[in-house]
Amino acid sequence: MTEVASRKQDRIARRQVDKFDARRTELAVATLHTLAELGYARTSLREIAQNSEFSHGVLHYYFADKRDLITEAVRQYEVVCVTRYDEVVATSTTARQLRDEFVAMFFDTLDQDATLHRLWYDLRNQSLFDESFRADVLEIDSHREAMVWRVVHRYAELLGGTPAASSALIYVTLDGLFQRALLHQLSGNAGVVESLRAELPVTMDLLVKV
Amino acid sequence: MTEVASRKQDRIARRQVDKFDARRTELAVATLHTLAELGYARTSLREIAQNSEFSHGVLHYYFADKRDLITEAVRQYEVVCVTRYDEVVATSTTARQLRDEFVAMFFDTLDQDATLHRLWYDLRNQSLFDESFRADVLEIDSHREAMVWRVVHRYAELLGGTPAASSALIYVTLDGLFQRALLHQLSGNAGVVESLRAELPVTMDLLVKV
DNA sequence: GGAAAATCTTGACGACTGTCCAGGAATAAC
DNA sequence: GTTATTCCTGGACAGTCGTCAAGATTTTCC
Image 1: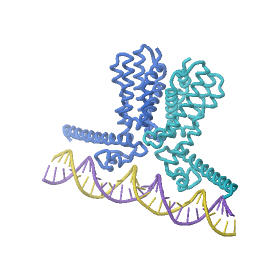
Image 2: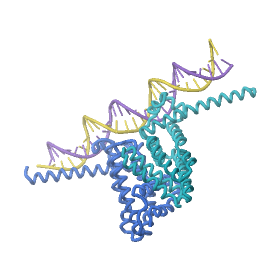
Image 3: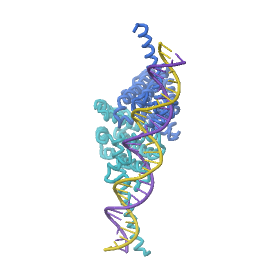
Image 4: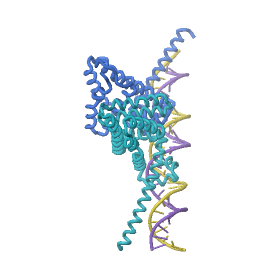
């Protein structure tokens, strides 16, 4: 084979790989939406296929099995989810602004992306039973922790202080608060959500010492 | 029917009801163990029956359907779970003692009852998708919150101070910490668990102002 | 002991599951 | 335009699921 022919072959191969990956991603996104709607326990391949434009058989053309598919969907979740507050951190110039915008975005995504968030908690919990999800879950969790840390660290900085607790503790506190807000949001209990909204700024100040 | 005969009838009826309830409880406990082992998504009635001394058919003699059975199992969980720290609170005479014994018991049950705890989180999460669990979950959650509050409130009292945050915030913090400890406990990541153990006393002090 | 009531087993049902595959449709290669 | 290759469909498969009911077994009652 000439060099030119070889390069052409490569280009074709690459294009095929790209196309293959693109469809994988497309199906993973459909999977994500199905999982968010039904939860892990009730999500079937046929249901996923109905949320895409293909038939159920095609899933085994692009994925080895159900686990492979769901793992890919989880990775898609990560892409969306772990940089949410970065812009707020980058653009805020005062502590008050950072705090207010963080709170606003916190409860905005709680409202907008409620089903996606409940999926995350569902999968994180699933990893307590199913070892095969654990590595991905732990990785995403650490990214979420880092994301929260960036917010609080910057907040402390703008206040001229330092975080009052470790990255781990700050994360579990704010994540715990989010989880509870999600539970009451989906329960239609707006009053509790509102009181948690009022509590979030207080919590942030508790987590920073000046 | 004479009064005596009527009373006797009652006694018989009551005994039957008691027996019926006793068996229901027995089967609910078997359900609880199965759920703790397999998780909600993979627990079937036949599997539950295998963890009892009966065949799968009997479950529909004592329970209307699967949901009824699982709901009863959840209630059994509550009986075990929401008074865990009360004795520590009652018997501790110094803040240091209360704190140390709380920490010890916190990580003791994390180790001993890990599968039961992961079940609780699984069911709480399931309630984000399935409305029929929500009422029970919210009730148990509020009992857990009250349990944690009793601990921290007493701790503050012994320190001559007051809690630094609301009951809700204190609960989500300690519960979040527990959840994270559970994830790493089941992942075999003993190092992380140990560092969380070291962090729990610090956290308690953060939640109290003197 | 024998009748009546309760309890439990067993097997069957229709529906649904993940997986696989034969073959049609679409696209690419020359 | 004619092969090759890739992509996708739709049905079949072996299993499992929740539910139910007929009948066997055990317990209760007189």
